[in-house]
Image (cartoon, rainbow, N blue to C red; front, side):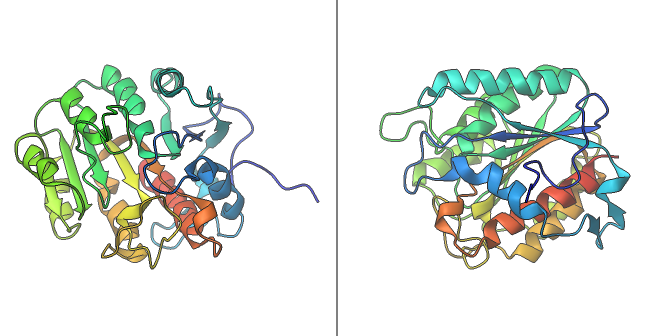
Length: 282
């Protein structure tokens, strides 16, 4: 039987869409368990197991128009070339004034997306959900790494333009870097997020969400699981808390299907996609 390969509810053309879903199947710099390149398609596959209606927001995917553009074709193993291609794709979506939601892939994919977004929104602020600080200068000598991505983002945007939530892992130097360059809420999402949302009204916001911010009891399918995280319910509440912000783009990264036979990580990611589209596409 034929089964669609796009996310549930996708429209037929890019032109008619308010929002665009794009897969970024890269896991070239992962430091523990590979497999996140399979994340985007698995999130699409399981999306047909959830409803198109959100009981939280009283909206349906039928109320908005979004287009699943598929996965970006990446030159396998070529980190720099892949990042450049992602930046070009993201720049077109921003230029066309559509809301992009990107599916990773490892967390390094966030950097070219933020670079593209920043060109259109010079006063951009990034909200980052993660178990890991991702603030290293390099990882075993490599500057282009999923462990350095937020360091690169913070330097691009300037001091204190990044807000980090749920962080519970990293080396000492990362936490020292955060004191000067980011707003970091160690092992916390609420109540800090509510206060930050009040402060950021009107600012253009890019949200980057690493699925490992969630405790591996709820989301084991990720490359670097870190015990002690938030619940799935708390993360859904975070998505809803930010609905009053001017969110101009978002990614959900680090879903690794091969590390979760139950598929519950992908199901959570699919539900987060639905809620984000309904919360941020007006």
